[in-house]
Amino acid sequence: SPQNDAQGLSSPAMAIAMACHPCVPATPRVGPGNAPGSSSRPSRAVLGSAANVTRWQETGLSSARNNARSFLNLVQVRNRRHSTRHTRGWRVTAADENETGQADTQAGSDPVVAEVSNPQNIKKSHGVLQFFGVKNGLLGVSQPRVEEVMHQALPVMGGMASQNVLNLADSVMVGRLGTACVASVGIASTLNFVCQAALQGISSGVQAMSARRIGEGRPEIAAVPLNAALVACVMFGVPMAVGAYVLAPSIVPRLTSDAAVIAFAVPYLKARLIAVPAVGVNFAFRGFWNAVQQPQIYMNTLLVMHFVNVTLSLLLIFGCVVDVPLVGQIVIPKLGVLGAGVGTTVSVYVGMVMYLKMGFTKAKEMGFASAKPSGDDLKTLLSQAAPTSITNLLFATGMTCMYWIVGKLGTAETAAVNVLINLMLTLVLPCMGMGLAAGALSGRALGRGDVEDAAQWPWDVSKLTAAMMFGVGFVAVLIPQTLLGFFLTNQEAISKATLPLRFTGVTVAFDAVSVVMQNALLGVGDAKKVAAISIGSQWFLFLPVAYLGVMYFPGFNLNYLWGLYVAQRVAQGFLYANIWKQGGWKDIKV
Image 1 (spheres, rainbow, N blue to C red):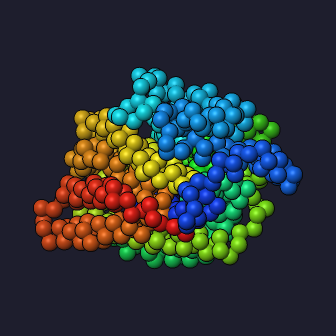
Image 2 (image 1 turned 45 degrees about the horizontal axis):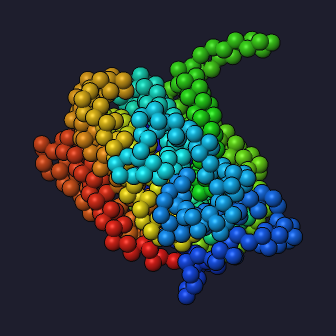
Image 3 (image 1 turned 90 degrees about the horizontal axis):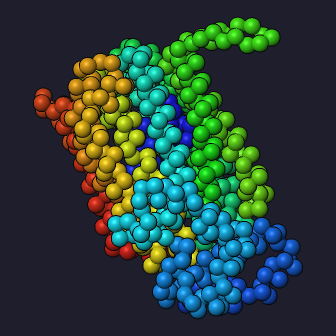
């Protein structure tokens, strides 16, 4: 869908990739509190003594930086594993309160601590839970942990929900132009995803690295990975965009022989490729805001981008005449599918400008645009991005192959698959918000040396996410044709997509677990295993069987192909959960 670039998702395929392997590799750094041979945490005296606070002030650190460090100190104090009760989502003992001089009083006086741990500052998530009657925990997850998950996930889920609505609105608009237009958008978006795969890998390391800097007690350099990622996105993104733009007319005909689809897809793809560097920048910022517990910035920016995107797309797809005071009538030409691509590209650059502005106002104290990344920082970022980039590139190429295979069945099937992917996003993207929360919570727990807490977060988040998506998937099982009728006008395409959509509804709860476990593994640095599972299941299971079925078995239709696709995704979830249970990720270090 053209709307996906508004949040840095180049296509439905790219959003599926983020949900399947939103590669955010991260590993615990050996630091003052977790060096080999030392205790897993610094001593209490080191953490919270008045002498240290005085020393920070005397060395000229800003009050904002002191507040950030005070927050980290309190978090580490509150997470000692000999705790016996829960308070405000953090484990606290009477001894902890005595040694810190009443931790709750400190939390109330420290603005940074209060922002995270004060219940008044998570009233939105608390209110949502109260509305649904969740007052004493859910599915074995304690109420404080449920509130902590929702506090982390709700802003991202809000952005994802708005993305879903606009994805569907955009599909409705393009769907009015005909089946060939829907098919062309699907093919071009997937090719655009291939171009952006490497950037997605580079930028996704930001969340993991920045979260670890926060967990290690070094918030003043938390934005250094972001600085490195922005440089890398420009260095790699501009050449890739230029090369793909030049080659677009020769690549699209290799995926389809339908002349109408080719005519619509090439200009649309060119319009989308112009935004490739900006998409990488937006991804990098999203990871950073999530790492420093400010995901609301991502949501607010995304809403503005959506407004620009849907408004421009609507005007440029269908054209109109606008009366402007003192200027007169302005005729906006009807661009059709091309208009959707132009609207998306403009909105991506609007978002990039907003992110940069927020970086200078909200992240300056963390080193944004002031702390120069070292060669080691860039090396670490690129080394973490390597398995991610390879995985994304192969996944993107695999999705392109999938469209090519489906194209052998016909144009109606190609259009049906494009709509199925958009509807899958409606179900999966909220899961991605929960998955990002699991990855961030586990990453920060490891950063402060709390392995036990890091191990438990993905299981808790998985239970909550699966329960949430079960009811949503049930709707797709009950009324698939009604849903498809909003996006497809061709009855043949609707008929072909009905059973596959039911498959999606049945398996979405399992898909939710897969998304959460993937993000958790990536959040602790186990990117290689995630890459092996993702690449192996796609290239050695799904694609070969799908190709052989379509080419050599006449009865192998879209129902079999899509059933195989969702089964592969469910199998990935079981494998990810098993890897997490084995616990090998606990020993990963940088």
